[in-house]
Length: 273
Image 1 (cartoon, helix red, strand yellow):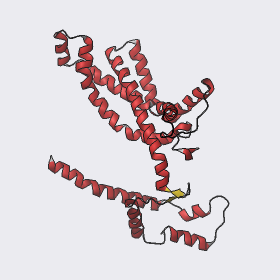
Image 2: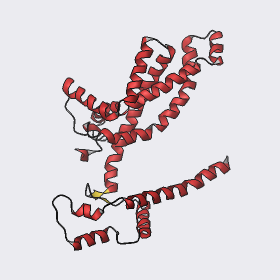
Image 3: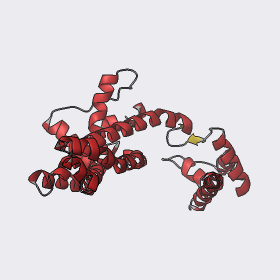
Image 4: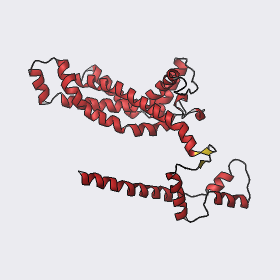
């Protein structure tokens, strides 16, 4: 086991280095000139001297090897350069956006699990019933519908039907209750896919568990059905659910960017407005 752990740790750093090299090379192979894109933004005109100065400022006049080591050295020191879209350091932009993204992702995951697990359990305990069919339709809709479409439909429902106007973003530390109220609806939209997926995993795991021999043994001892299901079966059925809930965190973060412009509270901080 120790050898395996050391081997995996030893492969971690070469893998990271290889990934950084691939990313750097791919970015350099993209056609076009970044300085031309920066200087020709809008109706701006520029001279040849300005173009040369821009390339010197961005170290584009250096060999690729030197550019790579300058870039990776800055990354290791927390310097990701400046964003020419927002006209600010990248780290400042990330500092504004990461807390909101993480908060929304955590709330989405919690809502998904809280809704999906009971839904999957009830569906497994009553197979082929109307409730089971309704649950399966819900889960298939959650998996099939794209997140941005769910966000748009939810926004239309809240504004057109519910009469709720979009709220300006309020920081969690300024007003936790208002912030939570703003996050609930984006979290529902963001976690709709996870609800369907986790519910299906829960249903499959629960249906497999209730057929196990130890479940029949527990029933034969005279235990109530609730004790058998929730005391013996549920804790074993939740193991794959916990595993699934762990690795859906990254996809939730990725999908956050797909629809943050549709729901105001889902934006990455005040700059999203």
